[in-house]
Image 1 (cartoon, helix red, strand yellow):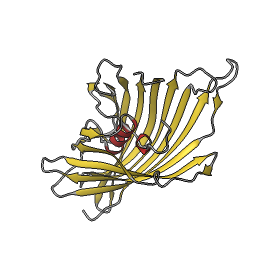
Image 2 (tube, one colour):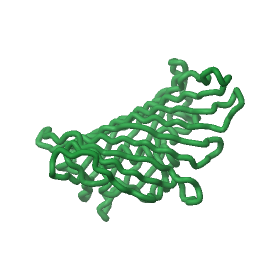
Image 3 (tube, rainbow, N blue to C red):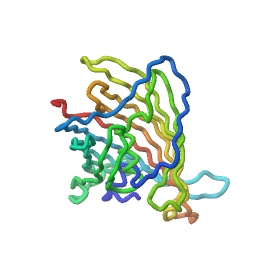
Image 4 (cartoon, rainbow, N blue to C red):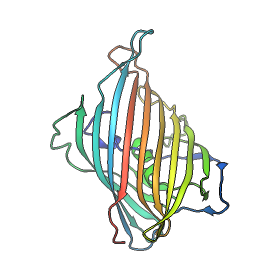
Length: 278
């Protein structure tokens, strides 16, 4: 999980998800008019987003029952890359992500990267529809799909200004439906709608709270909690910026002193549109 050569597992989120149930619960509403926030994919359109991610990783080891678990030094990896989106004839868009590992730190000291580690990698590709859902996703499971889906996602339903909607849901983490699904909630808030440079920009705040109890190796539980803020151009139908802070906690079956019983990863992610000509 922590091999620095495998950048795919650093920029996360989930291939092959199957939505089981979705409902939405309005929490509050201050205005009557509801706004639908969707991507627009006119012909021959291209978007590019610069991506920066910092992942801080720490292992926890079992100790005496009356003492707190021992912790490893914080391992930090910084990755940069590009999200590219290009419209298709059917009204959807083709997307891919290319990442490059820039820095690894142990005990706040930068480590020397090998030439192989410096090579940019295309970590995933997908087809995305106007509502932000993805089809034909090809890439690593879980982390990469989740992060990609959150960065590019839009509210699941129409939103009113200053309204929060919470959506309970359950999804499988792979195509084997005999395994336990990931369950939790995702909420959206349309926090503001303002004019900038003659454009209508919506500020959307999203939170996630997910639990995955499907066993995989020594992982017995995997939880995700995080908050993201996006600026979305309503007039042109595209994302301007997105920033996320996400905590992933893995509980492990290891009980030996030299084996971690928990791994905590903190992801800080920003994406910003870099091409303005279209």
